[in-house]
Structures are given as structure tokens and as C-alpha cells.
Length: 443
Image (cartoon, rainbow, N blue to C red; front, side, top):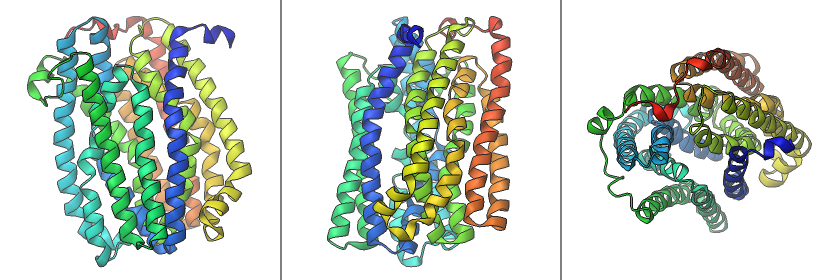
């Protein structure tokens, strides 16, 4: 371990993960405050509808969202090392153009489909206008360009600040809605404002940092012209978009499926359990977000990035084991304290889901390694097969076992994703000698 920390890249990963962790830790606590206010102020059915409304907008944005932050890191970070500002500018302009296009598609599709799906997911006619209002956040939810810019410019501290703003505003809005008895509408509108302000702040930070570094016109949207100057641009964004859309939509769409098959109250319980699960996995998530930019600066033909992945994965797996113990010991009293005893059934679900914590945290570097090696299509295949398997067992096990079946299916999906991603990663490692350093790839 002492040798690990002598590695400057490993220390940089931990430093940036600490920045993200400081913001997310506070954000997670504030999000619990917001959820607790909603849980106490609303009936279980209305709380479930609130969860479905948020999950629907998040799910649609996840389906249409391009992983433009990864594109900027993949092509922009090496360009900045070579002081090729024009190539970095092309990467950001292309990413911004994709964000605008995908956001418009998501907005139209999401608002058009919701009236037909509302009854199935438990949204009443009187609540439909508020759900449609929340859908107008879809374009800003899809935008990942400012995140990519800040990560490439190594301004993880700005991202950490932004990660506190949205949950802080949601908590304030939740408290006001609870104290003033504003009901369902109060929570929807206050959460809407929180999401909007938080996301706009990220754009402000990115624009200010670009101006500080005198990188002009980087936020002028473009598509075809910048893509022609970056070889492999369309292949990368389409492949990573589909793969990450599949993965990112797992949680929100699982909520929608649970709500459709078991009712809004069960969707609320699943939302509580999945929120605790995601919070427990956040420490490894911070490592992942700081790991990817650093590994893109290394040569994939050498052993160094692969060794770095093993060290980071072991560290993350250890964190996952600790969080598993924390969940098992403290999950039940925490849910009872925050949400009340009527939501304790969520702990039974959380206890099942938490079994997959170690697997999901320890294997996070696999996908980044595939992108580094230029095997993004292999990552897509792995995501696709895992999602397909998860979807099948989710529906089957909910039908057989009810809400507990959703938890068991979640564990199975996580394990399938890890296995299906590990196989091509091992193949890429064995053939690493033939890989080309991404910084030397021609434009």
C-alpha cells in the first residue's frame, strides 16, 4: 500500500475522489432530508407518485443522453497535454451540439409518451400537469458537456460545490413544503427549481473556467464540422451513449416497472431502498469519476494503467465491504428515523440489494479500461446483455416474489454486468501490446 501511494497518478485519483466525496456526502445527507420531508408529509401513494415523476424524467434523459463528458475527456485531455487548443475546442463544440440535439429529442418524446403511460405508472389525471412540467428538465438533465470540461481541466472542486447545491435546494424546498403543508405540488415545484438551478450552476462554472484559461468559442455548438476533424467521433459517442443509456436507465426504469406491476406504494419503497444503495456505493463512484480522466493520459500498451485499475478496484471493493456492513447494521434504524416505521419494508429490500455492493464497487474500473483500449463496442455488448438479463429476471421475480423479487433481480443484474464486462477486459489486457496510445492517434 505504501508503494501504491507513491504513485502520483494514484494520489491524483484519490485527491479528486475526495473533492467529489465531500460534495456528494453532504448532498446525500441533504437528499435524505428532502426525501424524509416528502415521506412524512405525503401518503405512501403520493410519495410513490413523486418518486415515479422524478424517475420518469431521469429515465428518459438517461435513455437519450450522450456521454459527452467521456468524449471530452477521451479526446480533449490528450489534446490539452499537446497544447492543441483547436482539437479541444472541437471536442467541446461537438459535445455541446450533441447535448442540444439529444435534449430536444428527449423533451419531445418524454412529454408525448407520458399521457399514455401515466395511468400505468400510477399518475392520476390531476397530477399529470405537474409531471409534464417536470419533464421540461429533460434537456438540462441530458447535458454532460460542462462536467466533461471541468473534469478535463481538473476542476473537480467546482463539481463538488455544484453537487451540494441541488440537494441543498431540494432540502430547503422539502422543509418549506412540509412546514407550510404545500402538498404534492409543493414538492414537485421545489424539486424542479432545485434541479434547474443546480444544473445551470455547472454551466456557469464551465464557462468561467474556459474564460479564465482564455479558451474562446469552446461552447459554440457544432456537430458535423467538428466530427469530421476528430476521427472515430461518431463511433465513440454512439457506442458509449447506448451503453450508458442502458445502464443509467436501470434505476429509474426499475422504479417505473415496480410501480406499474406492484403499485405506487411499492415504487416508493423501491425508491427508498435504491437511494440508500446508491448512497452506499458513492465512495467507489467518486473513484470512478476521477479514475477515468487520469487513465486516459496513460499508455494502454504498458502495464501501468492495468495495475492502477487493480489497485483502485481493490480499494473500492474494500470500501464496498465496509458500506455493506454499515447498511446491515444501521440501515433499519436509519430508515425508521428518517422515514418512519411505515417504510421499514424498504430495509428488507435494501438488505437484499446490498449483497451486490462489493461486486459493483470492485469492478468499476473495467469499463474505463475498455474505453482506454478502444473496445467501447465490447462494453456496449456487455451492458446490453446484462440489461436484457436483468429486465427478464426483474419482471419474472416480481411476478413470483413481489417486492423482494425486485431486490434479488437487482443483485443478479449487477453480477451479470460485472461478469460480462470482465471477459472482454481480460482479452484486451492480453492483447495490450498491439494497442495504440490514444494521444498519438491521428485526428
